[in-house]
Image (cartoon, rainbow, N blue to C red; front, side, top):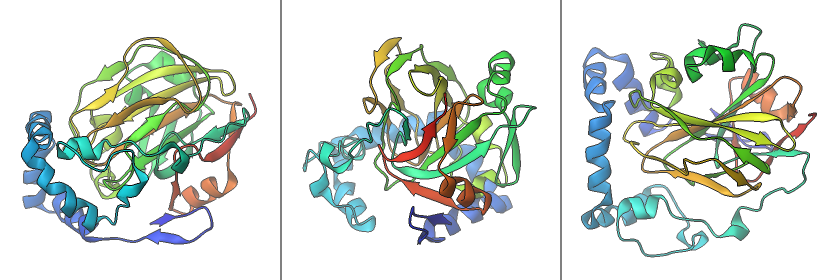
Length: 287
């Protein structure tokens, strides 16, 4: 269930959710999943969606997902992936530039969790540890007592993401894995966030401390497109994008650096994901 910032439920289980539930909860479905989560399959799908022929899918996708194409910089595209990674006009994603305000890095469905003293947290009845997520026990311990934000992107969301503050960032670290869907139904069966392919950097922000910024690939998303090198960045500056499919951005904060907005915490505890947009305030700094 997804809820907006005004408390209105905006999304219920649809055809895709019912299909994925059958795939992940039946013997035949899980047999098919074992093939679909292979990164090689994602690579093949990516090549197909890069082809000129794939542009034929664009009108169908626009209609099925009620996408207002006038919001974007281009109106014609050379392939489906060219369309899927389209850039929105800046006026439609204003960035809250108050230095003390934490912003959402992307359009997404957000859940915010407290990180316990054992560096663990719960997502939909599945316990995760930062050690499993980061493959780095020493780094994980530094974030005990902080917060982790899970920003889940659906296929109809805008698939570019930005930096949440001014600062400097490290090199990207890539962790190889498989490519489960990030739909919540999959998390009931597999610990997707510690199994999926992902990469992360440390963003040394001016106002929120050292923030771990992670991108998680998902089914049929073989390519997380990021700038890999160390550099100085600005709040609202584009960090990268995902090619076709649903996917996830994860932000991890140290203890005593942020206070998430109350509605987001309340919604998470109640089992709702909160619909947020790129550049929108989602918390405040106490750093």
